[in-house]
Amino acid sequence: MALVMVAQDKGLFQAQGLDVELKEFTAGKFALEAFLAGSLDFAISGDVPPLLAALQGHKFVVPAQLVGRTVNEVRVVVRRDDHAGSAKEYFGAKKRKLATSIGGGPEFFTYEFLKKLGIPPENIEIVSQKPGDMPAALVGGSIDAVAIFDPFAFIAEKQLGNKAATFTDDSIYSELYVLEAHEDSRENPETVEKLLKGLIAAEKFVQASPDESKKIVMKYTSLDRATIDGIWSSFDFRITLTPQLLEYWNREVLWAKETGKAAATTNVPDFRSYLLTDPLKSIAPERVAL
Image 1 (tube, rainbow, N blue to C red):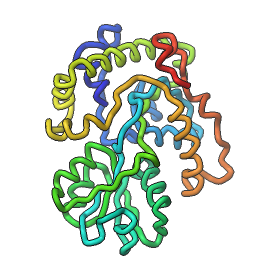
Image 2: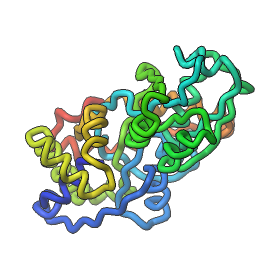
Image 3: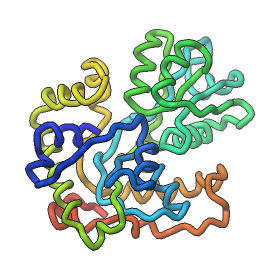
Image 4: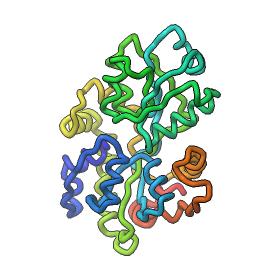
């Protein structure tokens, strides 16, 4: 996430006395897996992977979101044909093959999106694919559509050009990004507080210096300036905790049970118990909107 890269590059973690090493993953669910395995002290992912981990009994805490919201950051990009006038027409015309990131926000969005359209399961083949492989697969024609987050949605649109059609619906879901920390942060919140202070300083830098912030993201990723410019406004970079996170988690439980990711008899935890609010409250209480 941009805030982490900016904080690292501008020495904002170091200013808090933290020695931070960044590890890049192609999807947040992979970062969370490494975190749960003990390879990382902290992780950043979308909101779905920690929900599934909680249902599996894993213990961790979420001290903050790194965005207040996103805007159509997860969306469906399709190979345009004569039926691409609307999503309902496109997916209702014939059986389509759609790639998404299984176990993450894009899969949840796909399920809710198709459900709202009334597309029966037999009309679509959903396949799991790495986000980085999706644009080439879509261009090559081995799949008809992708449901994925940026920058991969933007890259797919860019590579397909006028052969692409995009369908969005942020009333269904707009992915949130969260910070995960280990449970011992409850008793020892000092490191979390320092991390959040560094991220809040990065947020202020991004607001004041978007051009330099974009250059920093370019330095830490393989993304070009056109891609970063194209996706930047999709993110409300903000250290916060909002009711939207709990709302999504409660909806995602139903999805997990309906799709067999969790047994119907799975005990649903109190998700508030996964939120570690004290560190952010102690620094900037106005940022905790729960």
